[in-house]
Length: 422
Image (cartoon, rainbow, N blue to C red; front, top):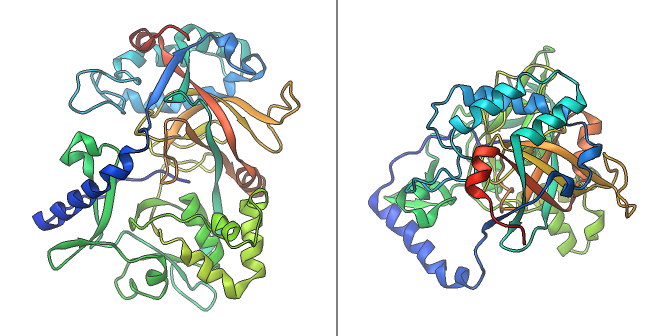
């Protein structure tokens, strides 16, 4: 589930903008019935973090240092989003100057020294338990970097295109038209002066983009391509032996429909049977039904070639740094800033830190918010990057359960956000 890279925003005709805002306004009464999502923080101690003493925090330092390298290129007054654009309050991420001393100290911690790494985090940060209003439980999933086989030219074998962003795709950040639309985007195309929905997956699969020179490359398996759309990035081993890394460049703006939920609705699977491996096996075993089921997910992702990450690193995430397997987390940027260390406590079928005192397998580890994704929405929501290869795919596909997390704020930022523990 990989970061939204920069997408060009084109001016909309007045009629298109008016129609968008009217459509949003028509939804207001229904949305008002549900309490809006809101991040709530409660100050806690490090001893309150479940499993904190058992983790090797030094394994998270490479990820944090990558974020620090990004901060080093920013001005001191640069705010770490999210923060209201019309407010002078720095927000929970603070400003880059709040991180200068923290990052300098991070670079002085000896590599692989568990005790020194733990002491560093306990000295430079204060932990806060996160909640959505009063609910501290949220959904946590996993993702990985897929590996496909491909070619730069189509052939009988390589006949499934990966498309670049179409020139007529209009993507709009609605926050530019009012803070009440913060975190909301819309995409489509202008037809006769009006913004209309862009082609859905089924329409594109039928060939609506053919002949427009949008093919980035071709791969040899439609199911692999479908899961690449879900993951957002991957490695494509080309027919000449070279490797091209591809990443998310945009999407068509159509709703994302989880095919696992669709199979549950149809009575084909039970909720506990839904996993990435299970879905892939079902699609392979039911070729006639595979295409219609995949097309039920109307969302379609466009790609570009990504560079800058080494062969032993993950893809480039939303913070424009290479992701670290097991230590990078995708979050909702509407609520959390990128670069923030986070203590994760979530269920996982095969654990990762061993069983808890209750016997339940859990992942309890320090991660860094460095990515985002279309399905990652809410104040308590995360997607763990597990790496690449079969083992990473298995671990990522198996993770879909409830959990909690704790934000580690630099001391200067924490002092501005502290509230008495309830």
